[in-house]
Image (cartoon, rainbow, N blue to C red; front, side, top):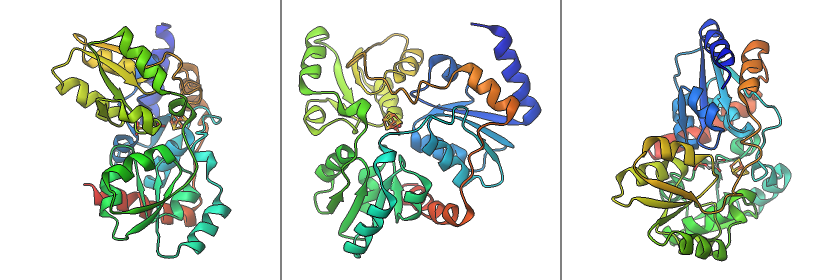
Length: 303
Ligand code: 13P
Ligand code: SF4
């Protein structure tokens, strides 16, 4: 590790009164320099009332956008402008508007993995950490749920009383995991508990001992008496799991569970972001205000 770059980042952070937020899927070295590492819900919460001028968001575009929605007076930087989310990109705004017209009594609940424009069309947002609670709390019997169909099916199982009109989106990193992968992983580690993310397909979720958001997995691993865990999410989370539970063992459900977008950000990108003030994420005010209502509703519904 080049200590020079770490020092430079630290100095620039002080000069600019900046805070680094990192998602649990970021590279190890990025997690290690971050002021806060978390899941989408924790990062959204953290972004509110941060005492800083600059937020360097090491994650993907929709996450930095959420921070910008909540912090209009701060500079929000996404170190790599091409760090997007293919699942968020599946929502076509015009098609969503058609659905809203077609189902006038069904408000939209959008996973935070959406653009600000989609959030602005939503009644409330949700994350993988709170989706069932949000769907239960929304005072309508029918809901348009975008964009993750796997998360939607998992929610529906827990909240069967609500009708969900489901968008056909998914996360390629989680969707690729099949039953056979779980069987193989269990054969290799017969004593391990299987923990998977709700973005996995229903057949995989059915085989799991526990289903949780990324930080939910961290809490589960800490509190469980088990010593071994097969982790069914992006492999970046294993760094935090191992760091916080050095006496336990964690195995990726599949080593290829990688999100290329989450891995673009490097220490060099963070340094350039702070030096050159790039890439500033701004949401047009009219969209920001509407999107904020949906994010705030989420934060209040589950506080
Ligand atoms: P969480 O960290 O909220 O579980 O989100 C997973 C994810 O895929 C983010 O892109
Ligand atoms: Fe999007 Fe999946 Fe990557 Fe998360 S892991 S950013 S949902 S593609």
